[in-house]
Amino acid sequence: MKSRLKLLGLVAVPALLAAAVPTAYAVGTPQPHSTRAAITGDVLKGLNQNATHTGNVAAGKRISVAISLAPRNDKALDTFVAKVSNPRSSSYGHYLTKRQFAARFGRTDAEIRQLKDYLRAQGLTVGTVHSGNLLVDASGTAAQLEKAFGTKLSTWKDAASGRSFYANDTAPTLPTAIASLVSDVAGLNNRTQLHHQAPSTVTPHNGPGGGYTPAQLKGGYNVSGTYTGSGQKITLLEFDGFQQSNITKYDTNYSLGSPTPTVQKVDGGSGSLGDGQVEVELDIEVLHAIAPKANVTVFEGPNSDAGEVDTYQAIVDSGIPTTSISWGAAESARTTSNINAVDAVFKAGAAEGLGFYAASGDDGSDDAGDGGTSVDYPASDPYVTGVGGTKLTVTSSNAWSKEVAWSGGGGGKSSVFKIPSWQTAVQKSAGGGYRQVPDVSAHANPSPGVSIYSQGSWSSVGGTSAAAPEWAAFAALYNQQAAAAGKANLGFANPALYTASGTGFHDITSGSNGDYSAATGWDFTTGWGSYNAATLASKLLG
Image (cartoon, rainbow, N blue to C red; front, side, top):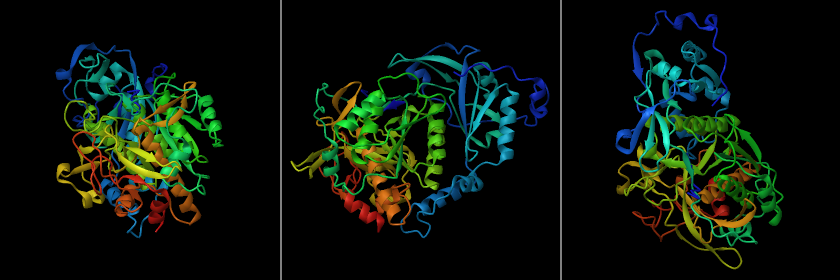
């Protein structure tokens, strides 16, 4: 997975005892399901056109997978989320607990047992069964996975990047009764790595780097000093780590007094520090700049399909209401089933009152870089608030002066999701009836960028990686006000943001991201625009 910052194996386990294999699936005995069905959309497209086959995955190579199951009563879940997120509904804000969600929409224990028994009979090790019974982790050798999922794992070399990867040759299959429950098997390929979206930094400085300070960001977006995010929690999805000494330097320089971030490692974490460190430190420091007293939890997972799904699920399991996401990839870089699996996690989060804010990408209207128009995922997900980029100008007193669309800000139409009901009021012909991106925007232009301290020096960093935490910080400030007023958290924000119809936003009417230009009202470059914290919070609070 690539991060928006674009500055861009488990230990072997003992063999299972024969007695531990359920007799219904024991090797050499007739299986109750003689037919198998494919998990549709769970294979990379165009491998032979843009990659070279180099061989077969070694039979003993250990691989971890995350198996997603479709929610029960999926249409009823759609209806529930639509009502609980709609300010005009009597159900608005009456979110489900994890236990309630599992009871209404999770798979049954019997169904999970059926899947686990099958996996174990194939020699796989079953790991965590996540809350809601909609995600099951497993691991095994390549040979065991090929047998369990009826496919072949081959090695390839990407024609464009030269990067080697592995992938399943055909869609995985499972016994028909089990296949009817499963929507995706993440981990059978490792081609796509999410990228971070802060595209550039200026030469490091001895001082604060030339980028916007906390006072300028808060002043530009009319953040009242009364609200600091105190008592609120925010998560960050990350595929790299950070050094607390850099965060401490930033906080101390601006006298923020922010709580030390907590780290939650998923599937062993993200490994050693890489070039994504700047992304992670940017995300934390922007949250501290705008919501300095909020408690930040950094979820660090492996940069893989399975790691991504597991990390999002861990965030939903945590119940933390607001998440900032600065990592993604073009929709075309993913399998359809992988997108559906991640979308199901976001949908569960929406039902439980969680809001996700994702950077829309830093390649303008051509996220895939193929000369066409395309958008980044997960910003294009209907249960995520996609955040585009602007260039903010503030006065000498740090008040908002003007704002234009940033040329690198991602935006356009999805090729996967139809336009959701809450977006039809601003439906554009260029959208062709598909989900339109972004929903909102905030400062992202690298010149000036945001002042951060990372890897031992000050610099100015830009990109929609800065814009996403700027919006997540606003959500935390709003939730602080809502709690004081005895009202529910913002949760999945899009229906409420669209109901506001532009009230509380800086409407950005100039600038372009390539194929699209800013205009009055909602547009493909900046969505509704950036926030005026005081007026938007007032509007949302009613």
